[in-house]
Image 1 (cartoon, each protein chain N blue to C red):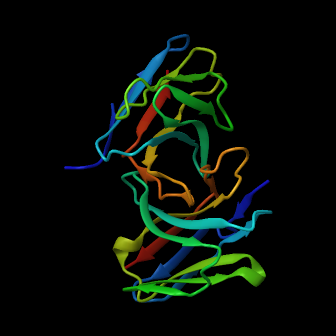
Image 2: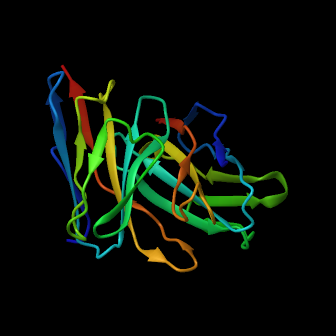
Length: 115
Length: 118
């Protein structure tokens, strides 16, 4: 099946720990994105990558890091520098078109809770 | 800067009622794209529609319809004869030609929680 997978579905972290959220897609999409969702809020962009080995900060990148070594994979690390990491994290991917943005398709999300 | 406003935080209707979700946007781009996504309780965002700024035709897909009015910067979403399975959070989103330095950033509204009661 083609799609976007995120793991784990639920993640618990102790304060001071780094954790890595996985995002994999087999849609052959060029671009990948990480969003954070807080209760009652819209999605806010953390990082995005339009090609392999390149990524850009979004609106709330502080305390997060990413890598894009393969087209299919875009892992997100939540570092201990992120002051309030408890949230729902969504990964998305899309084709990149010359004429404008293609539709972003989303994975099922990872719910991170800091204990 | 881009902005999407979904003024309705929560809406509750009874099954079979029609319901309209409002979306008002702000952008300085002449070319831009508008989206609607559905987020059921499972959490995954499901794509519903994409519309570019040059296409003001309204669209209907089954019980769903969208009304794009450039003059009022609105892109409203109507569900006809609502069903319990329509209960979800619905997000409106905007991507402009030059969205904050990237051509592909999505700006989301805060969402509208729709509850359809049997």
